[in-house]
Image 1 (cartoon, rainbow, N blue to C red):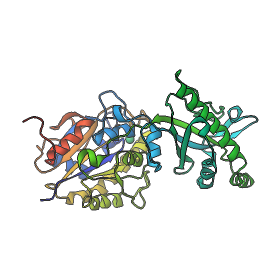
Image 2: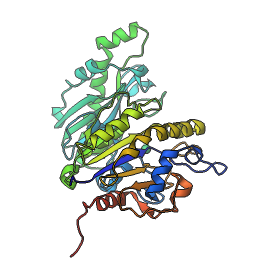
Image 3: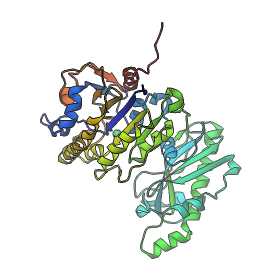
Image 4: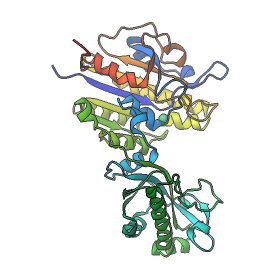
Length: 413
Ligand SMILES: [Zn+2]
């Protein structure tokens, strides 16, 4: 018999706090999601812990069997992994924006007039030019890679400290910040000096780069500064396949979740039209998930727009998008649930009236031959808690899936 497979469908931020007793998920017509709830075991889940508001990154780590408190050190390392930079333990990684500054004097005297450099999209030449900066006098080396649009990631290698502040003021109209050492160590002082030197040199190179001259001629904002934020030291994690002896695939249109996938050693399966927003090609994503189960033991389909619509405070839009997810997820009814364990859940709630992530537990439904089917017959915040899983923690979910698929190791004799 083939080893059994695990399929995660994570509908980002799908659950809500009720408004007048209603939520987008509960008021949406979701016959397929309800079907999975009715043939599965259900519950609610604190993806990190009760009352801890999860990021999408930390919650995904927890759901795939990693302790975020142990292996997460900020968004920088995740973005850098997503950008394809090879990370070593102890590296210092930041997210980077190309921005626009104006004014006189050094880069730190200048004012940020746009944090996205007019949403520049083609940064290859600029990245290449900046990559020639030499930080060897600080005992530091670096790798800089572009991400999508104005984004990128930078990794400093050598005797670096993460006890340094960001250079991104995070608001327009403010001056570029100097990196400051946040403790008394020599490493923090040197790291801050290296970053500030890098900031100044990068500005000089970008300011006179022909690409920016051309942009200016065309009435576009110059991409003449790099803004660093989300700095964190890379902590090496054991790759998923080594840790669990299973092959993992991620299907997602979202850079951050791709970064999590790379960070833990998942194969990223690219799907045409998987955009990470409400126009995403859901059908293609579910189809490629079914296909991926032939080559991988654990597969994630991540759906982002529910979270975005929650951040937008768009009740109707979120409800409609949930109905679209429901109609496309119907294809998974054809799976053989004696071979595949299907888990439908979310990474956190993104309530319409909060417009941000909250720690309200998320519904979870697990469908597999042998689960103790409970009375929950709808996929809803208001029904899930009646199910047989009761209230579980995100770090338990993967263990439960391992046990249901007969992969768990026995504890004791
Ligand atoms: Zn999320």
